[in-house]
Length: 471
Ligand code: SF4
Ligand code: ZN
Image (cartoon, rainbow, N blue to C red; front, side):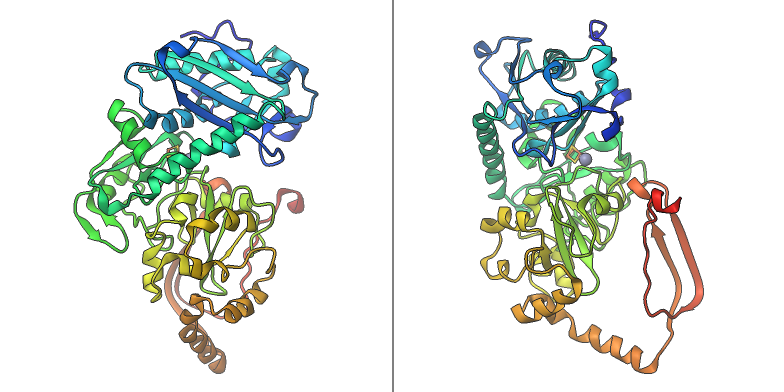
């Protein structure tokens, strides 16, 4: 396969390329544009014109520098061995293949897709969707040889994208709906995905019926189909083997696979915990489940949140701590599907004497709460605060008491303990403690080891110093 007819280079070496706003010529999709999507559909072989690229709307060369546009990418594929279950896994490859293009940055998936084209690429003559489509067709057919024919359609016009956007949302919903009916106890095989190791080298997704991949785009059915057609590919079987702890979701087979696939970095995971041996997070999780120590509960913020979370941090600020392929207790990258699963963080809940993981959740951004409304237990919905009701962690405590949120049952003992310490004005002996402060982007950071020490502090504030402020 050659790209010598293209004005820019194409290859895996460009996958990690970041295009900052001052380097970008145009932005396609992303949080500032309402409708955008990417979708793969399997079609009948006679309905595909191999190599055809169609555009509805302005081309790259017609777009003004610095402008933003909708983007719809519909990749239609055909082949004798193809089945509908493979669509989601093929769709995830759009992220990888567009990132292969020098001067193109692609983030996220489904209806959160976000692309930037650099000024340099446009300057070199990469100025049409026809080129991007041709590159996609070639890569899809070369990397996934079971695809015999492939055609690509782009939508950049706000009117033209409306109908296919609606169709894409329906397709995602249908996939999610199907997965919702199945649970981990119904199957005897789990799956793994290492597609994100190109930027999070120790990250391995473990995909089970209750835990759709954290990017939200590959459910158990999708993973099964992909592992079947390409067992040596990035998606593979994980035989769970013996279950060591049912509530935590700890399996011998998962631990073994994690160890092997993370190059020894991850030894053990609890599928249903965000606090102990949590699943690793790469960077493309749909939402972050974060611990709020002040109320002993958890908050969840999704990628589309316009507001800051209750802890004063934005999604992207927390994403830096969460991602990078580490196990980060208290910061967990998760899919939206997992939140509505009965297994959701059930281990953490049981540790506190609560019945369900959702009983830990005290705050969500309002958009997320609306999206999940129909899937969450009715008795908890009104007790979860959003940025519309509560912006301040001090008020959150009062709100939770007023609403009789289940988390307040976990407070009594802790409050007494704190009072006891305050009464005695005690120093808290901590013995030997290790804490790791993560670096930005999940790499680097440092470890502080405190030996035989006593700590007494009224308040501890750990703040990230922004580059500008440092200067
Ligand atoms: Fe694969 Fe997980 Fe990355 Fe999704 S988030 S592409 S499932 S590794
Ligand atoms: Zn990822």
